[in-house]
Amino acid sequence: MIDIEREDRTWDQEANWPNEDAQSTTLYMNPDEDGADGTLSDHPSWRGPSESHSFIDDPIIKATNLVESPESDNPNRLVYLTPELTEETRISGTPEVSIRANIDREVTNLTALLVDYGGEQPEIVTRGWIDPQNLRSSQWSSALVPGKEYTFQWNMQPDDYVFQEGNRIGIVFIASDYNYTLRPEAGTEITLNPKHSRIHLPIVGGKKGLDW
Image 1 (cartoon, rainbow, N blue to C red):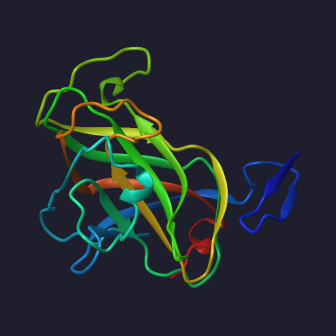
Image 2: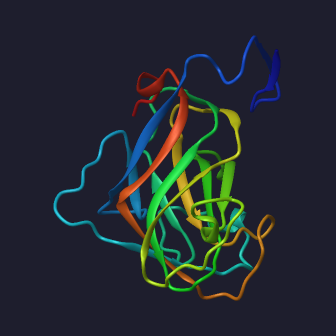
Image 3: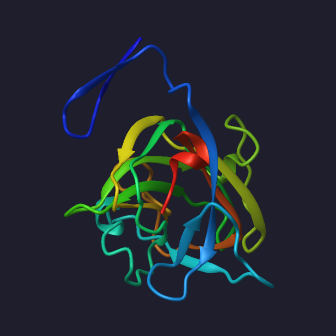
């Protein structure tokens, strides 16, 4: 049914897609004492009240620049990383994002980037966007209440990709995506509650296909 061009430019053929062994696997955003804004893990590790993580929209900065240097501070993005993978990890299907966040303006963009860290340059595997005003329906818009927490859920673009052993899977949150969204006035602040935020990846083999 499908031909898949792999990352090394070779081709695979499969009878169905997504892969029949792909299972939606939840990764939790946990605190990190050193490095990135937080970690991605297959289990939650928060103890006590959660801390909030904030970033500020700058629509002129491109996503390719915002995913660089994931372990350094950047006011215009949030990064959550897995440890180094101990085996190949394949996704096949549609990643999903669910975050709890508040925004200090009535209008903004929200973008999630799934990134492969490990080569010379980070590779944006897939991405997805939501207009927060379409919180409950893609057909109806309503202004946000600034400072109020909402749960935002959206899909990323479907993909089939293999993360190599030794690489790290990253989820990067930005607001405006230079090449894909409108570019509003800079300065909107988004505050994310990572304790109540998740990413669901369609991993071939489910949790057994993900190891570090």
